[in-house]
Length: 472
Image (cartoon, rainbow, N blue to C red; front, side, top):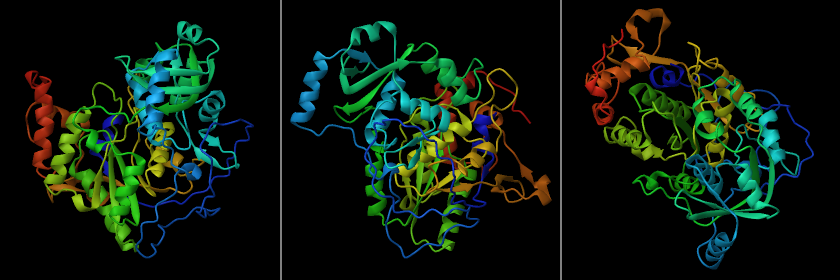
């Protein structure tokens, strides 16, 4: 399964590219974006074939896209209370779970310099160019639409009003959307351009698009107060600004980000620790890992966030990763499973959090084809696209080589083709079946505490009641 491939067969940095791309879409659109400031990063015209040498240790973090980190949350006090009062008088749009996740993303600046749900010019540039052109002519990457759908009745209720209130499932006001534009929601075009297919069974499409309204409303977002989930995990939901503060506090001189939506096994840990070793060898003094699990919508067969975070905590407790050089935080975005298109969003958003290195592996953001017995995307296209994507030139991309279970060493190790018979590739299906059946994987595959959490999760959903034969 493509979605599990990165879980089992992981990789280590092979080469890093500081890249430049001549793609510059010329669209005369009035974009509603944060004002750009001069970019201080020199980007070469060619492709680097080696990692850059580090200067003296200092915390000079990469600039956010557009030069300014967006913060759309109203300050506590009169301004916030005024928004609450206004929301009671405005036409109201009830947000779905995924809509609220996008409000969270926008409000904290993950999509900087975007300042609200996309209007049509931004939507079209995103769909057809995977980037946005700023007022100064520069380009920032933007590969997935961040849009808000409404139906015919909601459109009529809005009428000619220019400001609307967004409310949560309990009708609590969340935000004001102002200077709005309503335009047609061409679902087929959106799906085809984002996923490269309109085949039925795409998880995000079925959850958020198929039954959504036939109109999209864009505008500038003013969020009344910070989004909280009150699920015991808010302490991990650090905004880009908070992450930058933490990296500065630790005096980091390199930030390497690793996104995942699965439990961590020792192959992942090998990759992350080897990446840090290589950065130290290149002269960096204090590279910090941003371990950044996705915390928004995921498909039904993914391990839920609560259990993943519990497992990640055990990985640090057991010393598999060093807490002194690791920052664990939750990325609030929903998951599209849109492969090479979506992985650009994952990389771009980490720029805004201060990361200047991004680790990418096999089939990032991929999944199995929903109706055919094959992967939906080519396993290598994600890393290739990142090496060419417009607006990601200042981000150093770290591709992988494969790691697997070395039977001679009884641990996860980098795969050596000359002794392929010594390596075991444990499929995602086999890993899940072992956990469901309360059977242990080979010693050295995952730390014992982390494996216990995974077994506990499958116990909690009753999966162990249906014993399965462990696949070979």
